[in-house]
Amino acid sequence: MRYEIGAAPLEIAPLIAAVAGPENGAIVTFLGVVRADDDPEGTVEALVYEAYEELALSEMRAIGAEASTRFGPARVAIAHRTGACGVGEASVAIAVAAAHRAAAFDACEYAIDELKKRVAVWKQERYRGGAARWRPNAEV
Image (cartoon, rainbow, N blue to C red):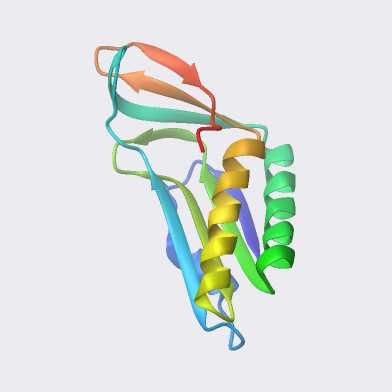
């Protein structure tokens, strides 16, 4: 399995490669991308992510293990960006492989929901015109 956090743009192919195997008949992927929300502050033009990397990676591994136990066996890979992500850029990526599609979908949904609740990542919304505001990452 693969768990990573960093400033480099996310690529889904390495996550798929990390979970693929002959025992798996389904691979499900999820990409969370920055959207141009209208907010009372203005229109979002970027999100800036900060993380406590050691704790975030530890929790990502725990979530992967839980998803594998609950819905598996399943193989889980998770990556999260730090730094600035513009509209349309991926900020989180998940790949899950399992023997059957239902388990892969369920494990992937569990992984993103738990990541948003538990992983030590914070985001700042930056708006056109220069305003900015920190937001919780737990909007499930």
